[in-house]
Image (tube, rainbow, N blue to C red):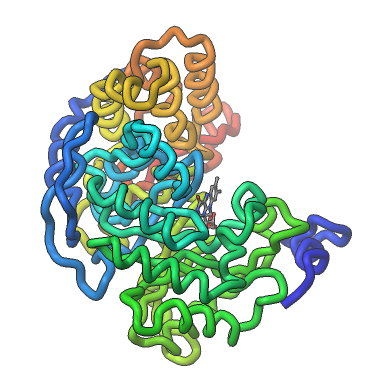
Length: 443
Ligand SMILES: Cc1cc2nc3c(=O)[nH]c(=O)nc-3n(C[C@H](O)[C@H](O)[C@H](O)COP(=O)(O)O)c2cc1C
């Protein structure tokens, strides 16, 4: 499929260049999010030190949640419990993945008598949530699933796609597992035995020299045949375990969406979600509507970086645009930010205790997902600077305080624009003939 060097050239990393104020009472939105967050899932109840984690729900259809038309990818350091709260306020329906949690961490902490809330707790309003686990031994992953069950996740996913040396360098782990389908089979069989909810796999198209379509077919066959594994999320590019950094591995190897459509055709009894390079909801909608050359259709689309770096632009219209709902849970960023701040500020102390860190550190983590809220819009630099300087000074005692100060830099039209509104710039000439660039939000 091509060497590291060829791929780097293709994207121009090596040698030749190529193309390459006023605050609404946000509680009504918040209440409806809490009421409607859970959908199509089967969970067990448990009460943790941070509150109830899960309740009863409905049965899964065909081993996956009905929400997986659109999902937000697992991203370490990014899709933490706070980011997921923000995402859930924007979309009730989208499936949210946790960061990858290493099986050994859970087993070790549990043996040491420590609470696992720090790794596994999530608030009730976040359903449906998928826990992603990383590991390479069937017995350890089974033990990790047993520990996670009480938290009531809606699905459990095995990471077979991460090429990070921190992950794949430690023996066969993450993407490296794709070279050993029989080990993955053993692992998912053990995980499924322990799990009351569906077990799914996230993988690449291939790894290193194991990068042909028939090898991918063999991987899917060997890891699903006769097992209750029905859903694969495919990051539609191969991974290079050596020679590329994790970030390069997310950009350099070419995307091959057609392989995912082909898998849907070749395994009609399985479900495939496509991941990699999807920038917005329009693209996701187009991919979901499209049929592959042989007629295959996708089960879902997963968005990663765009959903974190431009959360409002990527997720706020998802319920309407992807799931056909008549309205979205949030009507504006003013409402969203108010609701998010209220939720966060009510939990600072609890998270501080559960995570064993100072309130200031919790506030930092809660504010971080907000940095891209006004991406490429007037006021965005001042917004980010304001948030960052308040975090740095450590003076703020609440998320609400930081958000209010930051909002001063954002024009009212933008704060109150609906999820569907688009920013339009135009040049106007005043009575004295002076040209001025102005913007407006067009619904
Ligand atoms: C900061 C960061 C952390 C990531 N961590 C994980 C992870 O824990 N597990 C995983 O399967 N993929 C991880 N990924 C990969 C994403 O899930 C996704 O597959 C990748 O970013 C491609 O999707 P995108 O082009 O929509 O971003 C990570 C990506 C980023 C940017």
